[in-house]
Image (tube, rainbow, N blue to C red; front, top):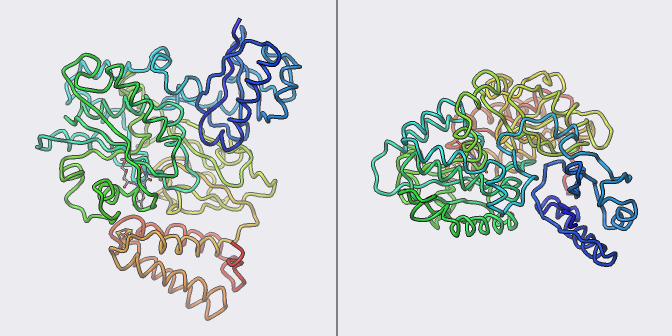
Length: 518
Ligand SMILES: Cc1cc2nc3c(=O)[nH]c(=O)nc-3n(C[C@H](O)[C@H](O)[C@H](O)COP(=O)(O)O)c2cc1C
Ligand code: SF4
């Protein structure tokens, strides 16, 4: 009997040796006359266990990891094709505590299915949301999304249903759905993971967004650094077209929708929606002044929905199970689930989808398992390079848009980057200013000039040139950037800078910053 073996194909696992492991398993099986079929699946997001190999047995899918090429012979010797014990044995995949404790609504099939098999997707309840949506009016679809409480997962947390309604009501013979897959935030990989592990859920979400708004064309804008995601998305789009999921008659209906992937060169500011639209139009990635909102005048000046990958991938389950079902998860005005990406100096780095409301301490200490170095956690940056640094005293902050805003922070794309006590927070503040200076699109002065001056001010503190006055100047500059910048790149850079200064004042004493070493 053929034994099915799953080896992940996503770029995170491949970077850790998944391709070599798959090749070694195939070669060893051939040498030993074992009948195996290797399926390349997406990752479950437990990166400290990747490459995680699973074997389908009569007892279910059993996992082994992290598997190195050197482990392959001994796995066969131990009888892993029957699920036997081995030093890499992890038990039933779904019983691994990190996975078992999650609430996977958006990532429900990621890791389970062959990413480009539409049959697998359907067999695991895929397309049910779209099938329901095809029977509904556009108004009712928007109502369901609004009622679910879904807010944009790209950073700003804007209610998705309200954005869709604006596009729905906007006059225009041509409307667009643009999926923001630029994913520039440090420590984030949810967009990549789902595009590589379950691309059909994004396609389904985009078709539903089209139905809701009257858009017939969609684009996935991503960066050149995501070649695997681009390849897999393109393959899935081809499969979707061949199966009439995309095209002039979506699933046999009178509704037309098609989509394509567009690749940007990879600038952080091209994740900002108007800069992204400029880039898609072949122009420089410079931020546009708002109004007009992209919902009214977006891509090619037509009404356009710009939504993050995870926002769009959360829609099918809402249409499948209903607004109430999704809304029941979460706290306050943060409804549903959020895929938290735990990265940096952390023991159990990976993707953890859960309802809003866990505290930062639970995420870092319990789920993440503390630092990889074994040293104490000193700071956690949440929300990418524009997010605040949290000290341990704020670890009781619940993962919720409003609670984070109250603590002068932001959730952003839900990236959590952990630092141990060896981190120099003044260096991190300098890094934030320097990052802004490098990535600034240059359109407005507080960001373009302020970030360069900010880097210089931090250098002056480090050199001991009237540090107390420089700190006041830094705070003043942050105020100007916060309120005077056109977009959040300049406007939010003060978050990492000021949180570092406020929570870690002892690090802002004159000392060498050790920058040349990097
Ligand atoms: C500098 C900057 C970078 C951004 N990068 C991203 C990004 O990589 N991905 C993303 O979805 N949103 C990003 N955003 C937010 C987008 O402008 C926009 O709010 C989002 O795509 C809307 O989708 P959502 O409502 O589904 O979150 C960025 C914003 C700024 C200011
Ligand atoms: S804040 Fe920076 S990135 Fe944003 S528009 Fe101004 S110069 Fe451009």
